[in-house]
Image (tube, rainbow, N blue to C red):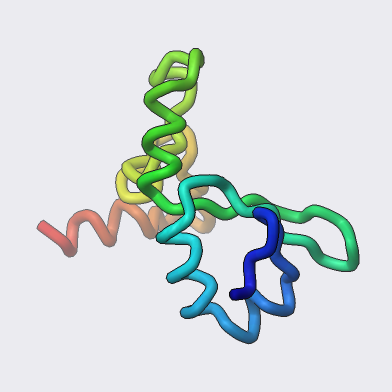
Length: 95
């Protein structure tokens, strides 16, 4: 409905987020989102991402940005400001 030839306008994404996400879930390819006629980002379902990650020639250790990266980021990617480590505090509260 909103996705045409694997492209999408940012305004459609903003105004129809749930419908667009449903379409992305059924799509087996990445969707390019355009803003002011310029490509700005690529959106794909997690299943498509994981399939592509398995078939990529880049070793997994060199490409740590899967779903697990955002749940448990490596220490070198954690930004610490003002002496507080928010991610560490959240992890401690989870346990």
